[in-house]
Image 1: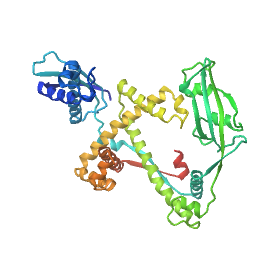
Image 2: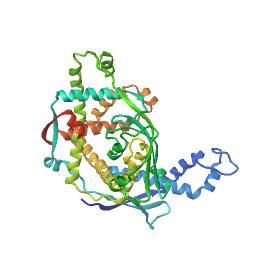
Image 3: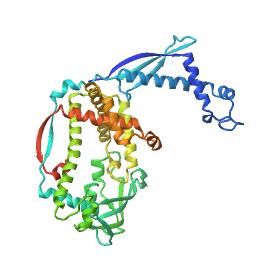
Length: 418
């Protein structure tokens, strides 16, 4: 499914430009002129000093609004490539622009739904699942005690990681305070293995081979050196299973006798959420296979930039993002771009099949926010975002009803690991 280049014309009248120019000029705080206080500059002086800027800004804003309206009306993805060129047949009171857009053939969900068959996990709760969940809750409520002995599995440690290339520190790939639990699969396995039996304040070089081969090929391994320093070690102290512990789990009637039954209920509730997420992901994957699209590189580059920025914000949580391959970023960007496009089609299908969808959304939103408009304004709640999330939820549930499933029996532990 390849992109198709289309174009349409947009005409801007002189009176539209005048109105927009007046809006820009009225915002006096955005201008600065020597000899005048900000916000106190006379309009004549603003017009004289910022004539070209005001003209260009007014046209840019009008085009932006008009293009957005056309894209929504024609059901074209807002994230698509848009290029603008001014035509030379302009008149005194009218400007004409030619707008080029890359569009894609619509994903006709109603035609391909019969071809989609996915695996659905059906839970069989075992005694092992109950014990596994109890242990997980104990770990969440555990206390940590500082220790000075050697590092063992499930110890929580804080390290400093320094990367040097040709004896110069690479700040981008160095982390000052990286905290993690050893052997908990939230760090590179090789580092976990190296750290076992190390002591507090130990400083040592680690083999960079696995980083070069698995995560990045940008550096010559002979010139890349990685050092780790152990700054803190803590051992885990798990709580005993008693009434006090059971109360912390949120169980309304804490009782050691009924604890296992209550844990079963927790497992069932968690299973519903996990299975729903799995089904959603598998449906999207299947639709992608049935609808290959060649996305423009500019869109993919923008998405890669978003993912990288998100990873930078969470860099202390995972070292993997530091050494993530360009290929992995590219694949994630492709999936995200597909997801936006497919989600849009899923929502459109739901709207077509449910004419009263607006009243459903309103009722659901009122339950979430309540009918107190003042309260909503006070909290500055983004009601449009809430609308979109409600539509998304209803639309996916509507889609799931149309899909064929192959049932697979699994334990709760297996379900979580998938």
